[in-house]
Image (cartoon, rainbow, N blue to C red; front, side, top):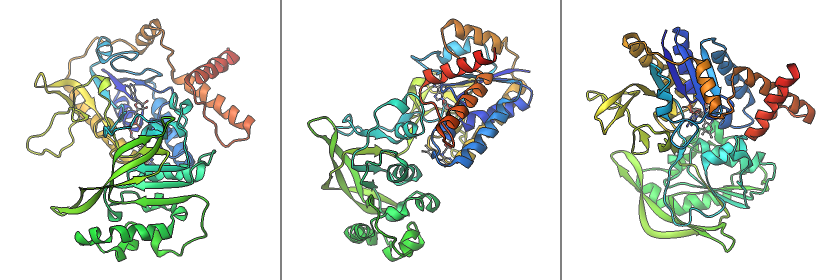
Length: 446
Ligand SMILES: Cc1cc2nc3c(=O)[nH]c(=O)nc-3n(C[C@H](O)[C@H](O)[C@H](O)COP(=O)(O)OP(=O)(O)OC[C@H]3O[C@@H](n4cnc5c(N)ncnc54)[C@H](O)[C@@H]3O)c2cc1C
């Protein structure tokens, strides 16, 4: 039996922990958030209850393994509670990093520090009640630009148009650098908001870009069979809020008003070009202005360099297979030392940022875990600290750890709160409140 640390308890980390735990090894999971689940808990759309409840059950099953230990509320990395070097002092035989993609892609636009400009990840964390985002200012105005045309952009539009309790957004504009055929969202997700599409404005927008679309051999008449099936359906009655699209446009600069909040977004107008069969956007020297008071970037995320693993091109560096450069490699590689970091692995969105749904993250975690198990077969047993020793050591650093039994107390406290408020579910949105609720529930049974 050897000891493996898993850092990050999202789907990738938990399913990796399960596989390693089931092989009989001791697994110690460190997680930044109090609750496990990562984006399954704090990213998946809040009203997808069935999916969330199903995943929570699967995660609880992983954590019910007696040799899988959970240490929540422990951010790992440079400048946080515990660095990777400090973790190594506990002598695990292997470490798996499954911290997701916690960095935001930076476009470096002038004015991007204006109020009302957010990254999608932070905004999604906010409406899914993840501390500390849940209590920060993510105020929304009347006209919101969402940059990006994938499922995350659609989720955010859905929140703004349907579920935001304040219902401030009157217009949501999806800004995309390419055209309507390059939309990346699933029709199933778009159906949720299709009734808000302003059909007249959409037809005007298609007319505006028609010549560019034709230039790459695309035919707008086929759009209903392709990325916009809504166009084949009769229009429904007009809604009070509208969904608009602005194609062939890349953000160029953000202009704040006197209060410091975004009031205008300048976009570069693009044309479409065929690059070896792929439709790409090419900037022109024309620009246009969109009057918006809120802007959300939904263009994917990147790995966070502050974790402290070797980092290059916005990602943690892994080994590669010279014979098959596309092959997924899980071992971390140190380009400075020119060698693999033995026994150190990355899985899930930490390995490939913003790549796929939970099923893909699970598969990646399990594939990575299979590599870890192979490594453990030949690795020397280390004198690893036990979970109890690590907990004692972290308590000495004044960390308020959340352990497996605490998660049950927390779940019960949230259930009780939901009942009292007459809600289907309730989530505490501050760490302090969660920690107090755990303590209160503990002392009630003591
Ligand atoms: C807005 C949005 C909506 C989505 N909707 C769906 C959907 O409807 N259906 C679906 O199947 N998939 C959906 N996905 C995709 C799904 O959430 C991901 O595939 C999956 O969560 C990725 O898993 P992961 O474990 O790699 O990373 P994450 O889920 O991001 O988990 C990372 C974990 O690491 C922890 N962590 C981070 N940094 C540190 C640190 N420094 N130290 C310690 N711990 C750390 C975090 O607390 C977290 O628990 C959605 C994603 C987004 C962004």
